[in-house]
Structures are given as C-alpha cells and as structure tokens.
Length: 87
Image (cartoon, rainbow, N blue to C red):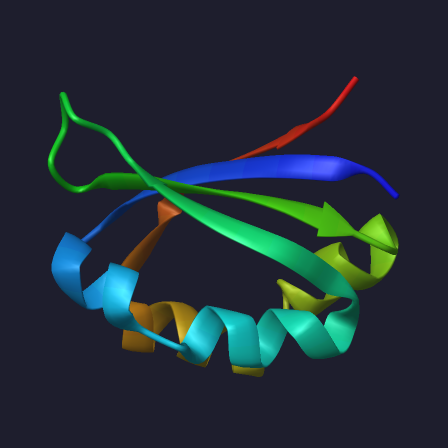
C-alpha cells in the first residue's frame, strides 16, 4: 500500500483543519491513516500524508463531482494541488 503526500493551498487553514469532509470522502475509496500538515512559512499551504490501497481508484475519484464538491467545501484551491508518491 503506497503512502502519498498531497500539498495545496486553501482559502482558510483553520476551516480546512477542522473539516471532517476529507475523511468522509477519502476513506470509502480506500484511503487510511490520513495525517494533516501546515506550512509554517506560507499560512494557507497545507498537506496530507495518507496510505492509499488503490491509486487508480483514488485518481479516478479525484475527477468526480463528489471530490470537487468536497474540495470546494474545504476551501481547497485545486489548481495548486500536487501529489507525491512514496518511492
């Protein structure tokens, strides 16, 4: 099971940190052990480290309206999103 890191900018870091949405939408597609991070240098840059059972399933989910709605609710700026896979 690969571990991935995702980082991106958000509109409101406190709102993003408090939101239960990411867990609610990611766990059903096989994502576990979700950990959140904030960038001390850039106040609106955040990140996640998580274990992913099926990368293809996760990437397909990221193209759905449900994923877009979840990101919008959390204030994620999707154009800033970068995925890194543990090597």
